[in-house]
Image (spheres, helix red, strand yellow):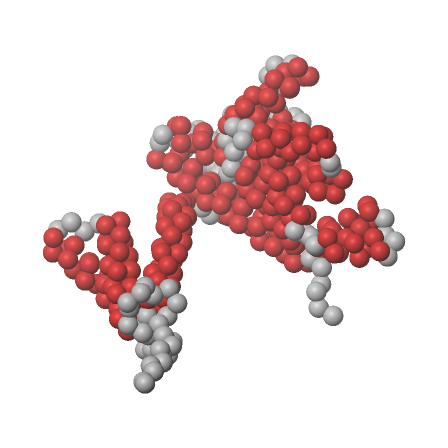
Length: 364
């Protein structure tokens, strides 16, 4: 009597029934093959589109990605195995989605940089529009830079303590209906349109000081209404990421709760909290509608006093220049937009330095 012993299958996990066995040591594509294939597909697609006379950048990108993904999957299936082919296909999809997300950002940065660099120079950054008529080839954005920095810093001075203390309460102390109510109102404030925040502050200012009293402080309060919920949400999530073991170890040493929060919880979450604060500042630094209603839109001279008279800001300056419609005004608007982007990038750079300096040292 002859018995047969079934040989163990060497097929890759995930392969369907009836597929030929595949060894885990099957052939593999060289590392240079995917980029070489992508370049070859791009050349072929570009040639076909040029011959057909219908070349366009979006069509070229779509056809190249689809052709590359299909060919790479087929070739990987034949040379390697199905599992590796699926991995390469998903990797291609992930990189494609990343490219789709980055394309608008890169396009925006390139457009603003190419259009704004024409007029962006030392003169433009160091003079105001005082005494300059709209059609004159003169004037700069210094007064708007001063207004943007002053209003944003005052808004941050209001928002950061309130938002951080609220987040600490929600994570460390809050419970019951009060915590639920605060969470609900924070969520509601997150979705408030900026124009509503401006109208709220205008109504509040009119009740306290009377109509017509627009100034930088009113604009800062309007921005703080938009900034506080972002600070609360980001800080709350960062505080929740701090391990409970750190708190319990501190309590075991007899450290009171408030000191544990100050010395253990906050330093551990410093990097994330700083990033969240910078996101909140970036959220409000480009707001236009609330500042038009509260800080005014006709200031042309430098004003360092938040409580005295109208104060220009970069977003409002861009809006006012675009409304005028002349070529020189468009140049000023593009240069101001580039200045605003550079200021935001500088703020993020400073935030990274602060978070790195205050973050707890993990080395022994």
